[in-house]
Image 1 (cartoon, one colour):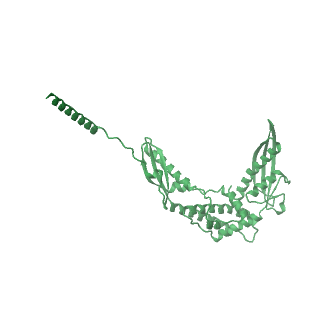
Image 2: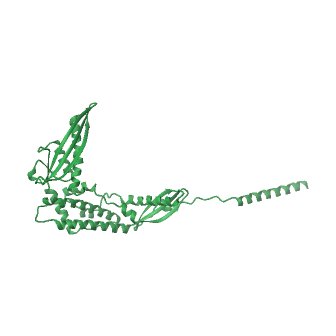
Image 3: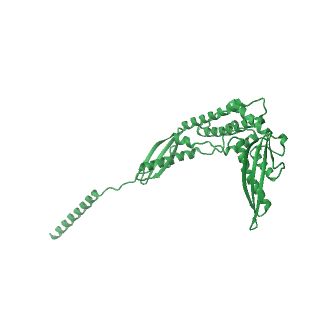
Length: 344
């Protein structure tokens, strides 16, 4: 009987222990499972209508500030996508954009100064698609209506075309084009801007472009003819030297034609007045150059003036002088080029 009692007691104890464990488990707070990030955080949607951007920000006491920062970063993501550099266009569009060889040199030089700004479009036209709060960060999905962007690009092209039309209506076809360089050279900036806008339009509209009206083709042809005939005489006190030759070389690289000390066949004259300073220190030669330049017409009327400075360092004075001439020529020609093409 005692054995039976002991067995019964053990069974009761075991049952009580199981009940305690069960009650303890039921009374414990459930573990919090961290919510997974939505798929759009890592893989933004891809479709024909919208361009998407994702931004994130750390959570701060004022969570609205976190969402504002995340929204700005999402807009920046879209802006970066809009800045995609077009490496090439298809063959059909290449035919649309074909220019005269020398004219193309000028256009390429201008392209680095002409930017199609997309940031304002981004900030004005984006809208919030999704927002999400995670453990330590908030996430925002912004979107830009592609059709809205396309319409704004078309509007900008129309504005450029209007300016080109004004130039076309102002050209006097009974006068030499070289006498109208101040009207026609700035047209190259408009043609370059138009090409960039059209390339952006082609990118976001899947190949659609705005064909050039007849008056745009006429202005393009006239600027090409002008560039072929246009000459800039370069001298230093009436004599060609290394600096004059360097300036002429840089002008040629930009598509303009220099004429060293040849006023008879030139349309403008660039007068250079350089001053040099030479120093030697620890077997190194330092050459400092300052150039004052004046651009004059055939009536010897000064149209514009510039100054530029540079320094050359080398183990030989000759090489240091060459380096100084090259640098000052680059700096000076850039100023002249921008002025001639209406960018300054």
